[in-house]
Image 1 (cartoon, rainbow, N blue to C red):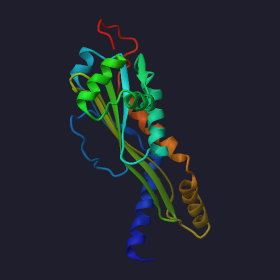
Image 2 (image 1 turned 90 degrees about the vertical axis):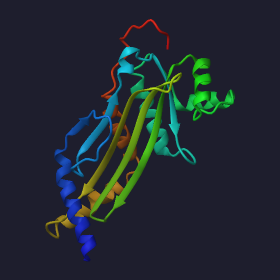
Image 3 (image 1 turned 45 degrees about the vertical axis):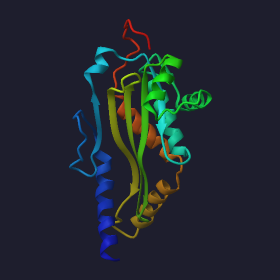
Length: 227
């Protein structure tokens, strides 16, 4: 066994033990900072004063992506829509927003077009999604899958930030065997994570749920302005 593989397996063993006792921490700093602990489960978020001054009633979801939409993209879209529906009175899904934008020949990446779009559908805020990284690692005795997501809610008219959140959620299993008996068990546990294609859906929902817990519920807020 070469030195690099040994180091990876030792790290895997540490992660395997640490992942069982992790708590989610929430950081409301204005700028995200790297975690001091590689295994720390952190949600970085920020709510501006503008949000509290006039909480939006309606948000339109926009997914930012390069190339085609993957299953992970669609899973994130669906999860964001479900969770936003518990926070706002009205939510336009990412798929419906794409369809409407095509019909009226508007680009939702263009600030001017976004203003026009928001006036047409009478929805004054956008929820932008970016998938920063999708990772899948397999070391025979350890497997790990992770998704890193950033969310932002902004006013359609001004582009002002109302809320943002970033989180990396992961799931791993396996470990460094302490005997020949535990060796096949570690391999089997790692193989289960590697072979389970649906696990990304669970990881995605964990990430979105944790981020959305930092967003106030505006459904009960009565304001004079529309949308």
